Length: 203
Image (cartoon, rainbow, N blue to C red; front, side, top):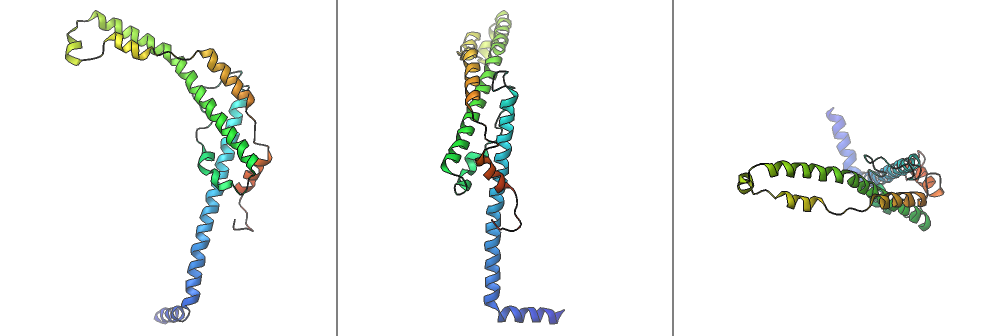
């Protein structure tokens, strides 16, 4: 055992240049592999996001049948965070197409949230009205002690005008109809190629 250690030490001492080269090569390899893995994982996430968003739009009949208010087209947005990784792989027009898809999908998510708020708003107003009637029947000593807002103040806060529901529905249909599906386009095909591991190539 001691002889092996001595031989190893002698080899390292006599081949410092080789050892330095191997360590440097290993460090560069690990760095490049990490970047490749990050790019591949980002491509997979973007593919999944596009596929899921397109499926939601199709299920809604491009907005005609309405969207589920409990879900989003883009629960995550990997494109905005990783677009710089694909500048060399995609053409400018392809990058623009994917960016436009994400922009419109994000706007649809915003409109879905607005639609949900419009559904909830009347129920909140009704609950506050019911609560204000009950509070009005009680004595006023609690208002002075707890310094709570009056029912009128609460109503002013809650009864903020909301956009007409028909406008939101119309916008959802218009944007959903104008969005261009990407999953079977050359741009997404390039992302699909990047997402697939290649044994013959480091990159």
